[in-house]
Length: 303
Image 1 (tube, rainbow, N blue to C red):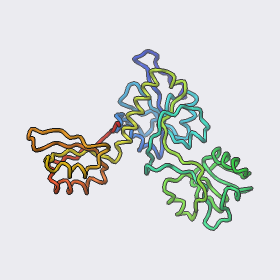
Image 2 (tube, rainbow, N blue to C red):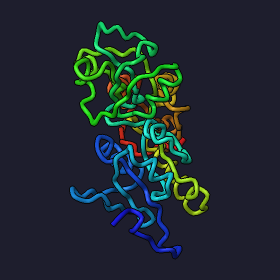
Image 3 (cartoon, helix red, strand yellow):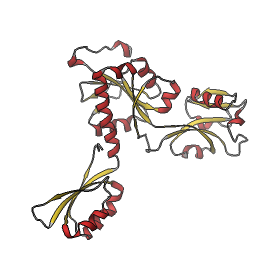
Image 4 (cartoon, rainbow, N blue to C red):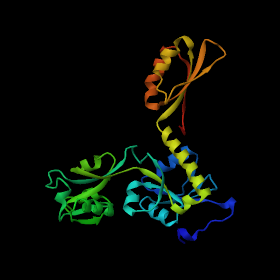
């Protein structure tokens, strides 16, 4: 049975969006993000169709590299994948929004040209007649074409960094920090593509009013979950006479929310702050006269 064989009902009560989520290295980070946005996904070890607490969604776990093609073909209504995979598939899709998260950091995933340290290859022009290994064959070929260079590009099934210099002259490899490349004695000489995660839709699905509204609402909540990453809320009481001093300490997103209390000499303050700053901030607030300080986690911040 294929993905297309599993049809859905057509009545309004049975309408669903079929959503592709990345299986593999991005899977855990994606499921955590979805949970913060309001969707609890239960993954079975042997199933590619996890359960979700939303009757309007059907989720399919697929390799991120495959998702753009299935979205373009209409097998999936929408999906989460990397910009690199969209470019590699040359997929004609609608991009709903960017989601700034990854498996390790919030930095873009960079596809770079790397060679052994001391290599004679110092630029794209030096690749003429050379052999290059990569998972991004189409992107690499377009890069060579742009520079007017002819080289042999072969698909790599993984462990690409160990293939130079014994098997190939250079590699085009994805990296977040560059640490793995450096550990294998490689140096980066150029960057082909900077990739972040994207929420994408099939163009026909996006033209469907119900699906467009569903996916737009999802995008709002997913971006809210991203905005809340690494942030917490702080509540406290503050004496009016020390309010200016305390307010100047608060790293609010805009300005702190200030509410009057029954005791006219005091007010309540509420802010959103970077969690990394709160450890140092709370003692300062206490010394400035704030009391009843409460720190609480955030799932979503909708600006």
